[in-house]
Image (spheres, rainbow, N blue to C red):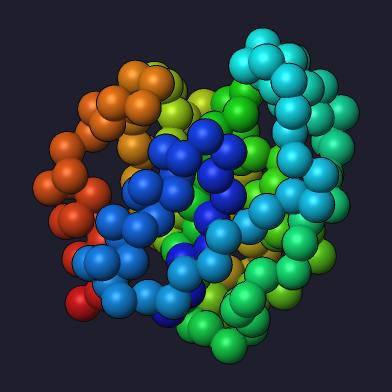
Amino acid sequence: MLIAYYSLGGNTDRIAKMIRETTGAQIARIETCRAYAGSYNDIVDRGQWEIDDGYLPEIKQIDADPSDHETLILGSPVWWYALAPAMRAFLKDRNLQGKDIYPFVTNGGWPGQAFEDCKDRCPGATVHHGLDVRFSESTLLTTETAIEDWAGRIAE
């Protein structure tokens, strides 16, 4: 089992680590080659442009090979109602045929089309019910019990 996730501000990183504690899965953080810079509003504007234009940032190689794992837990913040461009880049042209995919997303109020986006980008995989994790800035609104229960069902 592998947890592959992208996190910009730390919320998705926090949840990925909680899931790892429950599942014992290997974990790999997806990082862009060029860091996002500027004010919060600059990054939000850049994110909207990337989603609208289908831009995929160059990402660094992760320390794990997803093809070695039957189960992938994929974590992404929601950017403009979709998976973050870095997660989209990670999934591009990746053969996940026959894999079990469990997505989780972090957001400030609504996951938008992020789960459908994940299904669309994982053809041939079985994409299971995802976990919607809500935050108010860095304050976790989803209960830790709900996160642990979801992760525990994957680990069974």
